Length: 355
Image (spheres, rainbow, N blue to C red):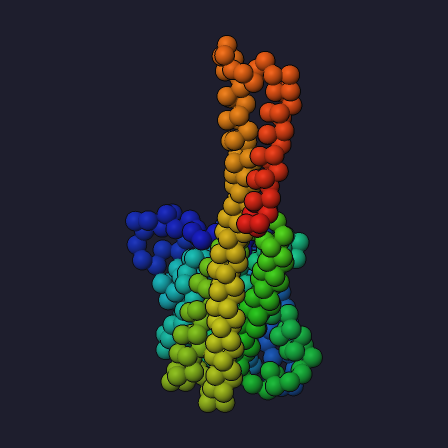
């Protein structure tokens, strides 16, 4: 998973609480600010150059979705937070890309921080990105580190007016964003499962050092997935039980659906972790068996040559009064003795099924 476990949090050491510092490793070339404003009859979509251009959407009579791509523009995010009344500590969490997924109820708005996970087909690796969602009375603000997300289907539904998204309010939009992120966990887990199946065949056939490295890479991916997925269960449960006026009763059933999906994701994840553990044990067992076969072969060879070396050693002493040394057929007799010993030991090993 192309996501470092530890970011540049040392840059914040000694700073007062609420100090806004972007701790991520990605820096988009240019801040991208896009927005949707819609109701059941119509919608508008725009991409604006200045953060101030989306300020009027806070008091719009229609549902508004503001999406920010690029957390490195700290000054712009600070302006946005100041206008929408987002607490500086939450803005600090939004810019801290190593933040544990969580949900905060601030009264006038809710803040949901999740990890969006996608599969990189080019590198065959998982890509993790922090997404923060602010749910207000008639608006939703989403913060991403860079362009590219799993929300394109939601944008298409808004454009086409299909389904219930245009008829519902901001709470349903926030649910759709969270649901899209959770549903994409299934895709990531399926990819990891395919990698495990491929690696299983490789371990069975030839458990080399490359297979061991792949096992460690998968272990790291599963660890990061676990850190990203497990807190979502608590988030979904808190949203379902929340008494916030920002979440309508009609949305509760959808939030319970997210909870169910999260439980399924966790079950899949634990199954994959068990498979990985079993595969690692299989690797160690196969390597051990391979080593045992090598040691067995070397031991048999050594065992065969021990008596042959003994015989050769006796007749290699060249004492003056060794009668076999002057015997005409002594050389051939010793060779026959050695051959007999060799054949006898091979028959013995065959009977013992050591060969």
